[in-house]
Figure 1 (cartoon, rainbow, N blue to C red):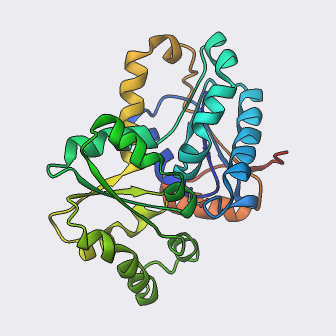
Figure 2 (figure 1 turned 90 degrees about the horizontal axis):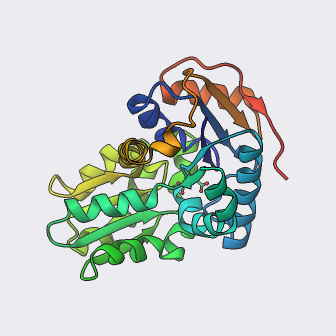
Figure 3 (figure 1 turned 120 degrees about the horizontal axis):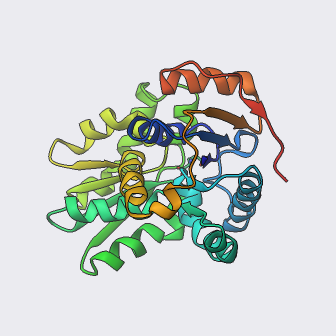
Length: 270
Ligand code: DGL
């Protein structure tokens, strides 16, 4: 089974393109809504929460775990891959994130090598996007901007209001002035504001949706790694787990996935 883990609802923007491209597999989505948002937490806390979720999902038989959240992909993924390395290699299991596929994609897309990254405070402070982009192209110039107020606006359904747009403009101004030609939407939530982002940045700037890119990269990954693919069950199962309110989760998930889901199960991570 493929498990998709996120701090809350945002990872549904990653689950959807994954399920669209790879519909046959069994999926479990875990949203740690009770402790979201992760993006303002310290790296230690984000690592601890991600470890607890990983333990839980491996315990439930996940063969492949996708960290849909940019914050956990940048702050915790490397640490967790190292910590669980023996177990993962021994059992042909893997934990993957959304960040490296986005970095690889943006390098292909950018002509000038001037790349913008928007993300949560934790993602931007980690500088992992900068590192991964420069590993691929050392001469790339990365301009990053933490946008901590966008997630609460989006979760309140306020992202189309003028207040949200004016905050967005303020966040994007330095990136616009930096003459970037590509912009990574480095947070699960930002695709929900993509039309406002495009309007502010202008038509010539390509926005990279890290969820969609991660979905395409997962497909290629499974084609290359048949030893992992072979272990994945294919009964089109969809299970949803949340650490907070299942009814609220169901409503949000159905709106964002455009499909009916069974009542999510409430679980405790510790
Ligand atoms: N899922 C997070 C991310 O992609 C955004 C929400 C949060 O801060 O928990 O960075």
